[in-house]
Length: 191
Image (cartoon, rainbow, N blue to C red):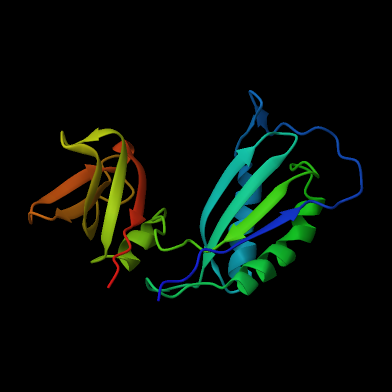
């Protein structure tokens, strides 16, 4: 049975006043790199893998969405709601004290779900052979904005020419440039 998608929300609770911070961009929230870097370390110290960080909301009410998983997990096994709550409670004191984040932040910690996003290079190695969907910013390879196939890996890792290699349903192998990709995620197949 696939893992259920779980979420835990926490609102910042620090009672102290904070000066406005430059983490707003035209009224919307933008990435704060020092927070992201430290989140990855802190989540790893708790024994989990940080799958994805998404920023949303506004500078006044930032929304920080984290997706966590067990290191080296396989499709069909994942984190529980209680594990998400544990990570959330562990991160809250540090986030409350961080000056680059409004005290009215919202933290959402969840499992990656059955349609887990593949974000980091290690994801493409771990899930080689699995069925994935690749969604582009525009039409990919003259076919569609969404391609599905078996993940064969990454080609020319770390270079400007980095590409996701797929085997499509008809058996054709294609290289989709990472620069053209908006999202890559696992495709859940009911058995």
